[in-house]
Image (cartoon, rainbow, N blue to C red; front, side, top):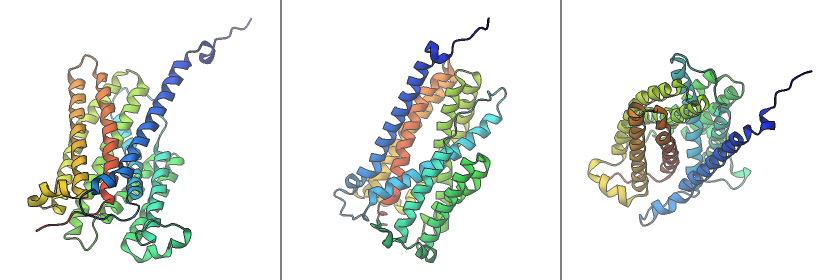
Amino acid sequence: MSSTRPTAEATGEEGPARRSGTGRAVALLALVALGALIPLLGPSAALHGTGEAAAPGVGGIGLLRAVLFAGLSVPLGELFVHRLARRLPGVPPERPRSWAPLATAAGFVAALALASVVSAGNLVPHGLGQIDVGGLYGSRDGRLALLEVNAFLLAALCAFLRRPAAQVWPLAAVVVAEALRAHPATEQSPLTGSGLTLVHLTCAALWTGGLLHALRLVGLWRGDPAGAALLGRYARVAAGLLAAVTTTGVCSSLRRMPPATVLDQLTTTAYGRTLLAKVILVAAVVLLALWARIRLRRAADPLTACAPARAEVIALGAVVAVSGLLTALPLPIRWT
């Protein structure tokens, strides 16, 4: 007589887990939808009463840039946290399904759409006839846009072919292209500005994507001591990333808004208002990070730090959305 063991489906054991997974997916989609409203609805609020005029389609461009930043952060964060995890003793072998293929594919689509805007003279094209692909090779912005498209395409291929380490170089090319794009040659000391943006964007991507993936690993390991160890190691590195993000962000802002004009421009220009919103969000992120770190060190169960860390991820997502909007708005007037 053969014995059979009841399956989880037959006993209903997987039901709560499946419902929990579905609930998390729905919550994630809702948060993404809410985040998309920031660049879409933000321009009207930021520009109201400033007397400034933004380029047509600024909301859509801000959303595309936010998607591009997210597409950069997720795979870089996965690579970063996997490297941290490999250095810990006794780490469980389980790994969550990589989000890098989806993220890099989304980044590719966003980069392609932004390249079409550049090819149409920095205007939103309303038909294929307005897109001049060949013209991209004739301008600096066009060549940088093409570099981002090709780099994201290569990163997506590496992700789909399960060659995660190979993603580093194309993703690094995207960071370099963004740093150069943000500081045209006509700007005063453009290489200094590009250097600041390079460090700022790299550290911000590692911080945001790294925390997201660290929490996914901790959730998969379900109470294993390695989870708390990973969060502790991430927190130590994140402190350095935060310092670099803050320093480069302040320096970049002062290059565009001299100290004597900062207070005025923070409330009277669209760029300044959006920057102020970003600063407030980053301050909230810092408080949540400190709360999580205190729990890691002092709580009886260090994994209670996951609660403020999850809130920190949500706040960082809002920072990414605001950053996308910030890059699409007109630059502030450099008063002297």
